[in-house]
Image (tube, rainbow, N blue to C red; front, side, top):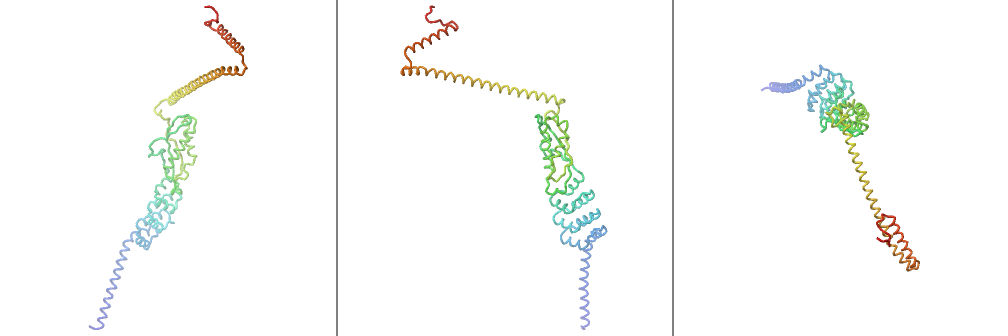
Length: 352
């Protein structure tokens, strides 16, 4: 075989290898173009600014392409151009819900509510439902107090006159987006509103004042700053229902309460009378004991008289004639007492 034939064979073989490489590269490029072309074309005509290199990079980083591209298109069509594709991709890689954040930002933008992409991502990563938060901020919601999970359906409060009242309130709130991360939840709002209403009712002199002006109770509750430190802004507190405990089916509530009050007063007065009687009996017993004590002292003093007389005899201060004169005086005194008495005892020496 000649040298020219060998060289021709080598050249032909090289062309085949080069052609194969070109073919493989072309197939790879065709596969890439085929795989990304639909999303790229959609983003291109939407003005989203997503390039082929962006799509390839997202695929290498295992980012769901359709999620990022469609979210970017939605933002651009809503007139929001300051959020980049890389921002959406970063939130996706952090475990965030990009579609929810996108819809929330669009809704806040249309409602003219200030919500930055950074705050929206923080709220989403904190586990809060950012879309529901924006919806609540746009359309305030009503919370029942007590809440649906409470074991009781009404608040139990007592006025200063001792009458129990049952009340139920409705609280209108909207989300406070800047305080949503770290702010207290609905349970805290319900607890604070219930506490404020019970306190306001308890400060009233009579239950009638509460029934006449329930709006004053709600106003006082609202003025205490119930939404401080919470994720909500309280718009209004309204008393939905208020009634006197135990007389829900009575036609004349006033008469019922007056009868119960009269019965309670009767029992109280009886208890006070029994208390005074017991105190009087105790005082009487104390006085009898004091009389007996004084009598004992008199007996004790009289028992000392003979001893004193004996001492007087021994010391010479008392003579025998003095003693007889004292005895005569005592006998004369007894006779006069007998005569001035009932007459049953006769004087000594009289005949029967």
